[in-house]
Length: 93
Image (cartoon, rainbow, N blue to C red; front, top):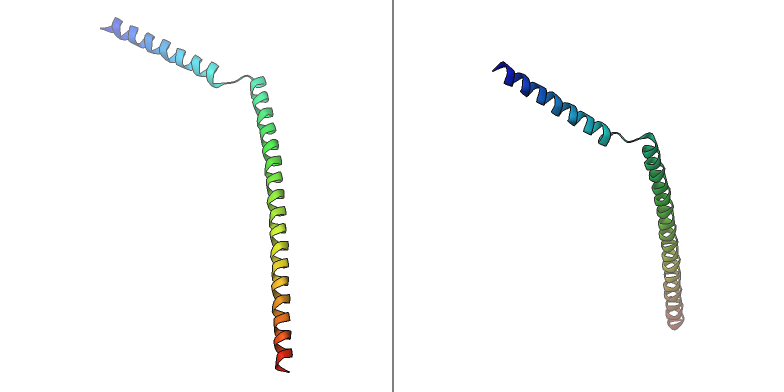
């Protein structure tokens, strides 16, 4: 009974050692791999930042154009209303 228990403990130790070594080699990257991954992340973040800036520049230009169009339309309607009032005032004289 003691011998089989000792064999089981030895197998468990070997299994634990195998798992530990696997995690060490799989889970821990080399410094160069980490450096390359970090460099790629910086490139992606920089590219994403540029894309967002370009996107919001376009949105700002669109909003400015919409404001100009609405200002023009309001000015035009105001001018038309003023002309109608002037015409109406002349007719009453």
